[in-house]
Length: 73
Image (cartoon, rainbow, N blue to C red; front, side):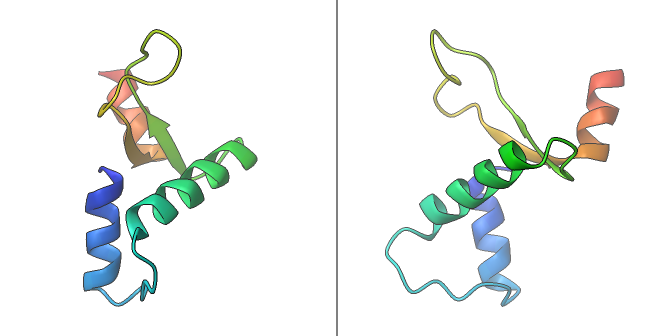
């Protein structure tokens, strides 16, 4: 899922109540920080590499079990 999709689902389910103008940016920062701080995190970042960073628009977030299933295919 993209950050926009995750944020939309979280708002629709009432899990978050954003007060700022950029809830997607906040969600992205939280997901990235969590995945980086916890090596065995349940949420993993999937992306296509670019020249120096991830290719624009290629970042997706998935559960580690879903990501593992994709890697095995």
